[in-house]
Image (cartoon, rainbow, N blue to C red):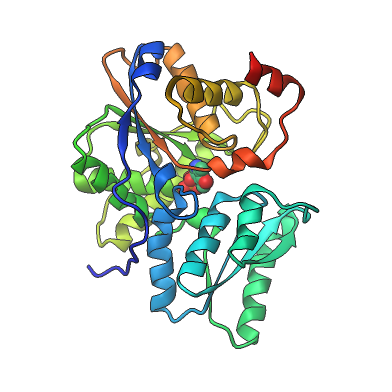
Length: 325
Ligand SMILES: *Cc1c(COP(=O)(O)O)cnc(C)c1O
């Protein structure tokens, strides 16, 4: 099957052992460094964009439109990839423009993206509106969904699983942050197609378990498999999601995330991000403490990036104290 793909990610990303963290936690932990995919500070959206931008070009698009949170890593990587391939990029962002753009938002503007601001309940409408206006102006827009999570973007993670299996590390578990579901869906399809026998656990960042596993990941995984000409029966029962770590909601930092960020930084010199990998790693720590994994098992933490968001916020009060202690 001929599926268009561009090649700009730095692949394969390394798999690293984390000896000091493993010793501290009493279980063997590896990390897959998709925070190092090479494009504009890296992250999981880069693999998806290899397929999405190839499809955009195959369809003759001259611009891409996508959306997300103000500090969206997906938007930052999309803006960078669009710049690299000479496509205009419009980002529909939720919120109000701050007087001083920082972190991912600063990078969006460096990459020359046009920013359109909207509210949470109008975001879908605004994306469609922006697309319709572009068409009316004679442009050829290509619309990328939130998080790049459709059956094209998820292909990036089908082949990421193939890549991991070639690295011959065979972890018993893969633990990964899951939000719009494309990463987990791709991994699940890749596991079936290429014969990964361990289990894949998504730590939900912002959605209840049933919604993410049933409505999003299982459905997207089945559609992604079909895109590859494979008829895989994938149901909710095949998808493992844990939604115990949603805390006060998307992007709200709690002591759990701070503990995880500090532990990874101070045992391994490894940076996590405050929104996704910090939360997923906090879930991993808690599950280890609850003895969810058997002591002889190996857990691979799939690092999905997001570290520029570390610079998006001011740290004060309790958080600074936690960082200093
Ligand atoms: C988007 C993102 C995720 C979630 O990936 P999905 O495919 O949307 O589930 C995880 N981590 C980081 C850093 C992200 O930017």
